[in-house]
Length: 520
Ligand code: HEM
Image 1 (cartoon, rainbow, N blue to C red):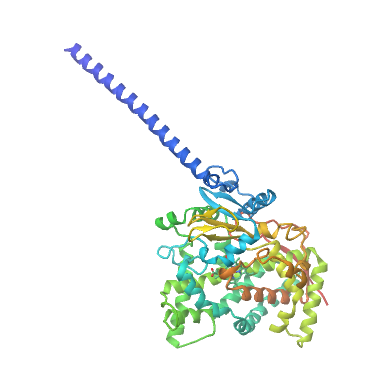
Image 2 (image 1 turned 135 degrees about the horizontal axis):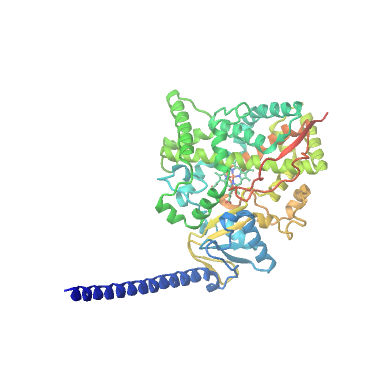
């Protein structure tokens, strides 16, 4: 009996061992095959541009040509600029790169760019930016929406930003300027440094709140109010933000299927509530104002002659993007301009002289016509946006197959196009000695000589920034108020400004503190 048991055990052991051996062998083979397939697949993907005879930079798995997220030092803006520079140095008209596993086309030649942005716009209507109407309603705004929906909305929103409307809004911006003036006066009196980035953000938040929604945000009295809080959080950047941007940039369709959320829930709730309160109040009290929300309300109620009426979520998303796109861009431009003027007192004095001369001409007042006459200030503003293009990389996506002019290349439908403004604006061929801050680059004679795509801080073509006039007006008013009677110098404890590598838009890393004193 013992002998039988022993034999049975031996047989079982033999088979068990055999099965285990077979399983582990199979497993090794299986794993090996999967790894090999993956390796070949990645190699095949990373050979995308090679197969199409397009020069490209050797990518590294899994980040392609962008930096590993945890070690990001340059930031997306500078990474793409370096890619542009490398192609340009080698004399290429364009080249290929990869963001994670996704191929991206990087144009270098300005005539090709002109085709993409303007002449052949019908192939590049969309940016291919991630949005999801269902799970993340605020993400479906004018900047991200696509195709006919974008076209129709853009046509209906454009009348908000005509020069006639700007003239009308001028006084509203000036009213917000009072808070800015008081704040600057207070800081100067108390001998406190000016945190130029924060003061600009508080001013532009007040302005957008007033001009777009008819709200008084009172940011100077309460710098942590909810408007400022939510926008501050949104633009703060950080590793999480970089990761989300990179993943949504690379896999927008997958993110859509997974219902990825870009805007934090409390931000969505806050903005939806704000818009709802305004809409309810105006409808209940039959209040009509000549502002942006009114235009949206007209569209919502089907008063507009074109297109369909809007849902509430669609209205809220458009209102929200005006806050997002409107305040940070202008306040950052002001920050960069002030920083450069603090470094170059000659430029600063020249702007101040111009402001004083024009203000004197208009009975000591800052007027709309006066602001338009401050041409040297415009040059300073333009040069600030040249050296620091706030939206440093423009995006487009080929919505149909597109034959690139004067080449054998056809871009496949769905190909991402990354246009490096940071690269172009720092290209010595167009802007000699590019690191020098030189407003004379934008004197009327010099400006005329520029290729239309050599300088595009607001983008170009039908998808150019819709708020361009408004952005320029509010920043120039802010600059006129702050510079008229005050002088700014670099703070000795904080003389150099670094750019953030983790913020979604080009922004200084940390505070930009300037010393302020009154000038007679
Ligand atoms: C200095 C200030 C500003 C700068 C530098 C700036 C820059 C830009 C850039 C580069 C684009 C992309 C254009 C393209 O892809 O060709 C853009 C789009 C846009 N901007 Fe601005 N912007 C500024 C101010 C504003 C303001 C004040 C608003 C609104 C009040 C605004 C609203 C928008 C919107 C809604 C879009 C999307 C337009 C579309 O796709 O049809 N921006 N902006």
